[in-house]
Image (cartoon, rainbow, N blue to C red; front, side, top):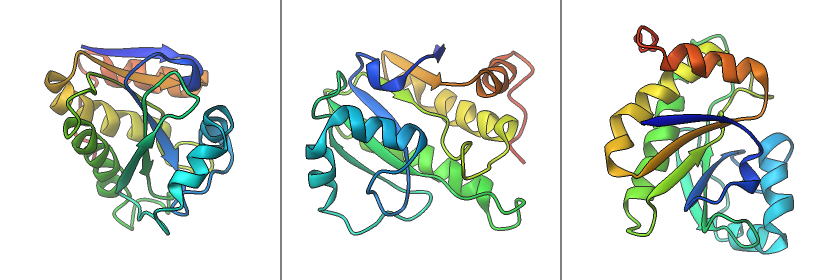
Length: 171
């Protein structure tokens, strides 16, 4: 079962949290900046192993000072009206994050931020449908799968996507 929480993802006691990262993997605003601030400077030091991460992909690091053991840094696409494969790239970010989590036997609980719905401008209802579809396809591998959102607009979009009739194609 997928849980929806309206909370600060940096406070969750789970095995892994999924960061809405930028391609540069160097922190930034929103949830990415909050995760970097809470994890401490060691997170940025570890991320220097990578020069970048392309949209639709992800990398995994230690959680450092976070309650979560790991941070999966998933890079979603910037919304350009849907004409540049944005839905497929967003789905790829979720799928890659799940793949990295499945590769670690000690990740049984995972919490996702709402990837690409902040400054990247991805429409929240569509992003929530894509996220929930990916979560439903992978939830059987984990003890807990959490959609952790910070704002009411994302919470409403996830509630709609999680409703029995909300799992429409992500078109």
